[in-house]
Length: 225
Image (tube, rainbow, N blue to C red):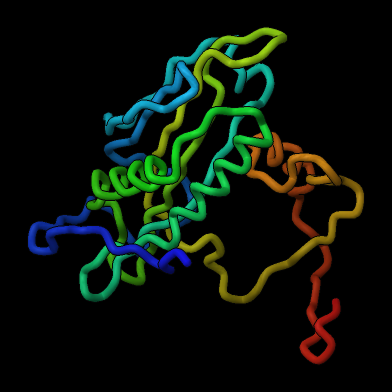
């Protein structure tokens, strides 16, 4: 069984923090210094590299823009009180990415390359990891069809990239949440792509985002709504 958490090697004495008001940190994009990029053109991903965070230049005819051929993952790195930087089962995220890539007929990085890329990004941006209890470093691996394609496959190029940004709690309000049971729209359906983290799964849910007007309560005794 995979270990529950992995500790990354760091020099605590040399550690410096970015100039961030950690107490005000919410859950959203916050630009950091570096990202990882690897491009696959022959069915296998070569060793990628850490580069400065920057925008991509991409073909208007790319598979991701025309056919939605893309996946993403999400995981976090956090600091412990004794100065370590921890990751929780990044290999499981790698396996889920591979499962999704198989479903979408995409080339994909190995588990070792995925985990290595995540660790490289964390260490390259370690000053952006919040102090213990102040938040985490959210890590976003993305795999997408970057090569131009029109009508037929295989796609000539895939890009695997990993970036990260510091985040606070997703929900800051401790008073609870108002929930809505959606009975009109469907994010997933049998034999579809709801079981993988395809980028096409999420935009259709935005139509259901208006604030709900009712609360959903779970009865403790019967575990029913």
